[in-house]
Length: 140
Ligand SMILES: [Zn+2]
Ligand SMILES: [Zn+2]
Image (cartoon, rainbow, N blue to C red; front, side, top):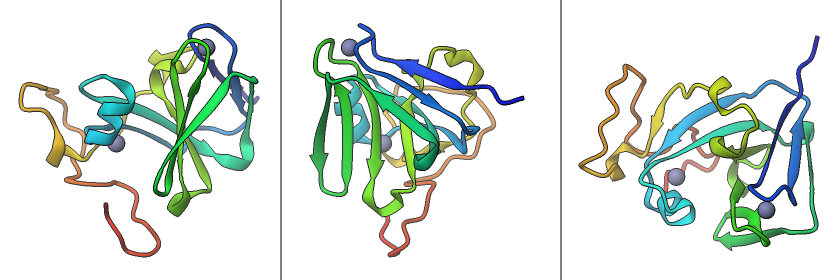
């Protein structure tokens, strides 16, 4: 039995569905995610890009170097990002999944940029920077 993993923006103009299991669920404490989300810490659910279907004319994108973030142009919800260096996956904001409680993060990334008043007392691995090595060895 395959369960579809679905989600969408706040207004419903952007919807997506994954036909594969998530390969990655994590927190990110980096400053770029913080700006993009407006929240002190972000969480993401990653799926193989070729198993994703995303629809909605309202979908807008913003490019920052190799990272392209998408959001709903109608309601402003951040939706996902792709990183050209690890482009075989799409990472969705955990909060836009239809059943967010089903996606328990397994690690923290970029704790070197974590805000000092954010305390998350779990036993998950904590990576100073990225948790997914870039093929070219860079570690922004
Ligand atoms: Zn929307
Ligand atoms: Zn980040």
